[in-house]
Image (tube, rainbow over all chains, first blue to last red; front, side):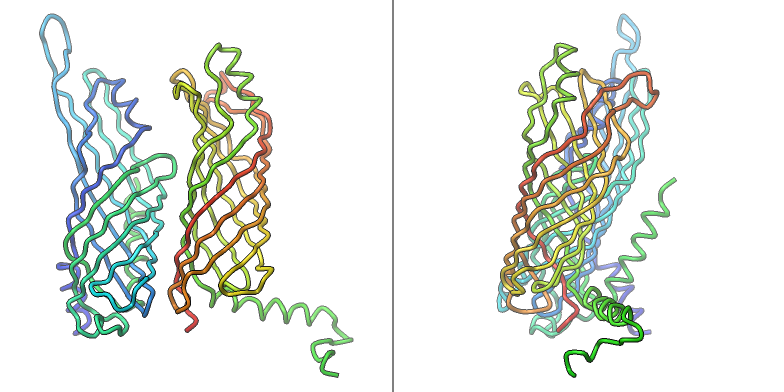
Length: 215
Length: 213
């Protein structure tokens, strides 16, 4: 019961804000062809990170979701009739990541990591004459640097992870196979420290959510 | 007598089976690793460039820069087994025409040196490749064709502690793929490409977690 309360507490406090400067070259041409606007600014969203540390190894599951929108007006009929056009991007993705602590004694933890994951990307572009709706599942990989400061003396002393929230800053670059959602990202906020077995449970749940979300 | 302890004259296959059964736990207690790499590739694109020449467009250069990623098992002093995806982008000099060469392979190798710090692995792999050609705003994609590869990989394990393992690696390999056409989905148009062969140079890092303490 105590563990369940801890998990619920962490699900609420384990979230951070994510900014994603992604580029989708495959879609750019399609969107511009139907005279819809292409959102160039970063996607804003939420990130949930479940982290576990065991000596010099860090495993973490990371889930992000984000949204961006761009609107405008395009000439529809001469001489000066305009029609509203808009494009919406939405994504949800999850990954398993491994990091290795180069320095044991330094607090907070600073470590490089690499990860692989799966995501769903959805684009809705309403152009002047045509509509282009795309939804795909894409695999991706990412690499970056993360800084974690857990609110637990035991974890900071070097013991195995237990339930505890932490402050988290993560930045890196994401590569996406088939060129979906590729670019720099930054997440800042809270993350949740779990015992190692908790990570696998979260990861399995996240995969089911992502695969279940495909239409 | 000790030399013949594993030998059963009535059932010679049994000792082999015993070795296989003994090897399986090695895979499962090995480090689970994730790989991220950059790579450059030289690919024979004669067939595609002949087609592009017929259209009076700029030809694709045969050297590219790409990346790869994967996951697998890694035992620093023994062997590695991984599933890896790569994507290479070949461009024309004016950057208008593009050729994407994507692969997914399962590959493995055994460490010749049996050292936990430095490893030399002859690598063999088999998988599939998917290609896409973008010329004059039109996309030509082919089916997934088989691919084989072979080469050598050098590993340097930078961690002395466990369970976290951080490794740098350098790999050189030759690739060969079958398949002849890049088709459009409606079969009305296609580009003839010869079976591609090439050389890849990859530099990457792997990070992983070893359950063995």
